[in-house]
Image (tube, rainbow, N blue to C red; front, side):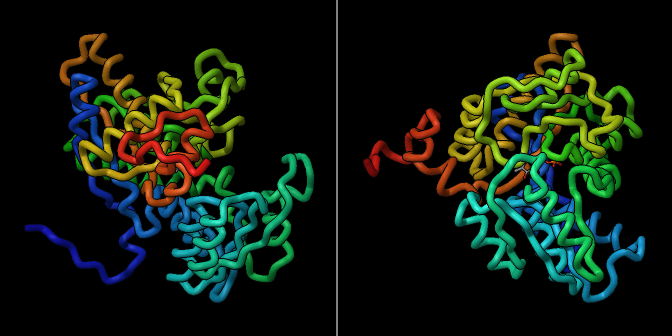
Length: 339
Ligand code: PMP
């Protein structure tokens, strides 16, 4: 038995398990593995970026003892920052639009973050939550702006952490990796890290509808089509984290297809995940099938299981919400409607 004891809670971030996904492997006809990022203390892949961004600011001397980390985000990054900041003795300020779900506000407050709510507005407006968070960081003494989209400490978390972990877990035999992009830190960082190990590993972007990157990598044009309800993914520009990402191929996956995998992974394999994980798994199957069509023998593909489904009880796992979004209702949720 090899069980590990850690002397620092921050060591609980990363070194996540890798699991062979039976249903997806059967559907693809090859091995599909999922990296269990929901096993991080904040239950998502973004704990890694939070830790690297904060340690980078400390190393550069920008963040001194008792300082504050400020970010504009309503999601997993805020949760990761709040936990890492608590562990290192920093304060957290999270700026978010006031139309975000009650659960997100409650979660961040529960973790001890200070919340600043601003009216939702266009990015060009100086009152936008991202600009507001930058201004608060500038105006606060001993504060840093995490700036997850364009701070490349984000992707370094995956170059130095996720990629070498995958390479070791698959014992140096791997044919492909794919995931969707929010900031792009995961796909770019894992892609760069794995290519450094073996440049023949195929790196595929799996894009949801409503994002511009599929068209960018397919034909050089940043153009979005359709829409998606997936949280945390779907990017419209080349962030600093995405610059130079070694993307070999790309797939576009619908919410419906992603939700089918969310349902199957829960009912058949006991994994409760968010929609970006379902979309990633569908992309991994597409990548496996592409490699098989090229006669690559028994390709091994890895993808990211980004966060826990417990974060989406009022949305992805709620019959009324699913109906409202025109998505199939999981049969075990019943047909009752509150109408
Ligand atoms: N899935 C979820 C649920 C997320 O919160 C994020 C982070 N935005 C991602 C996927 C994408 O990760 P990245 O920002 O590294 O592209």
